Amino acid sequence: MDKGISSRPPQAATPPRPAPVPGVREPVAREPAGTRLRLSGDLERAALLAVADLRAMPQRTVEAGFACGRLGEQRHVYTGPLLLDVLLAAGPRFDPVIGKDRVRFLIAVTGRDGHTAVMSWGEIDPRYGGAAALLAARVDGRDMDSDGPQLVVPGDAAGGRYVSRIASIWTGPATAAGAG
Image (tube, rainbow, N blue to C red; front, top):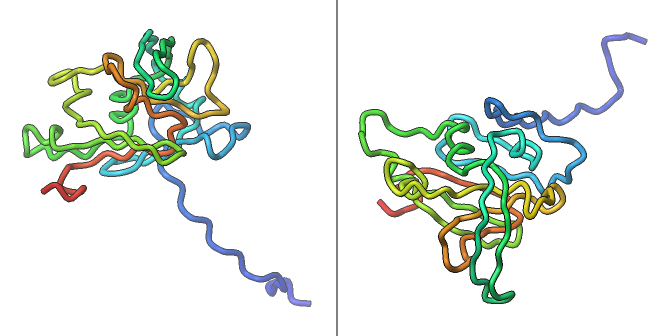
């Protein structure tokens, strides 16, 4: 039999993987795929991040509270990287010709339950609002590996933007969202 001929059917091409975010490890295999969050949008480096990847980035710890319509007053200690740091590591494609291009960018954070909260880049940029929004990888000292990260927006009186079990984060100019 000729060694150059195979009786096996051809295998489907493997889809390309998103480029890694500098300073972030490959997702840890022990974490369920559903707990990884996808960074996408107008970015140089889209990524698929596990909670462990978020813990590998510089961490902030904040104590924050909010009113939950279902559970009442909530107060927790959250630890994780700033949302700004995670997005900057992914390389937002701001137009260098437009001096204030970054204030056109929106950020949409979506949980696995479909709940989405939208922020503007100006809210988290220290040159504008400077909100210390973070992606909690730990809540009250408990690692969020099995649940997925949570968006925390200290200073919000209501918990609507505290998106739990984040599945995706999209960022891009408002014109891409149809607000042009």
